[in-house]
Image (cartoon, rainbow, N blue to C red):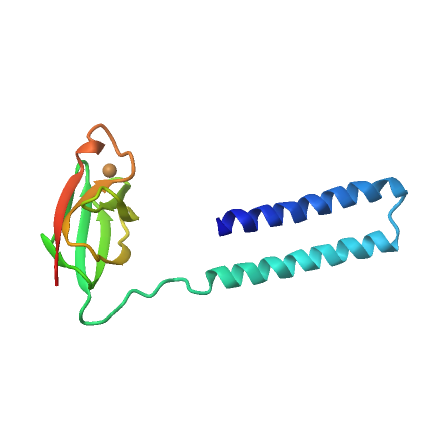
Length: 165
Ligand SMILES: [Cu+2]
């Protein structure tokens, strides 16, 4: 909702700029006022873009916790399986998933006992993508593939259990 609101406000601002420019385009050749207005608009938008970029990217990249109580799970995808190196993870503790594949791109998606998607991360050959999560609800979780990767894409199902801590 916030993203939509900000997008609509920015689009309205850009639309106003275009309408205003078209309105003033009938006033004959460009004069100092119009040139100043353009210069101000360009510098204003540039400064605004820099502020928005810095503010929105400030917290990246997310540091993955290095604390001792972090549980690490290695999840390797392939056509067509998930190889998850744990069967149980504790609830209430940070779990770091190392997502990797042995062939093509896959998408690591983790669904809870209620069928809700909790987290997802792209799994790519040649990279280890990390995502961390704290499971609050014990139960059986499923790992599915979120990236169509071939004829048996739907068979990429693995499971692990979140146990009460
Ligand atoms: Cu896949």
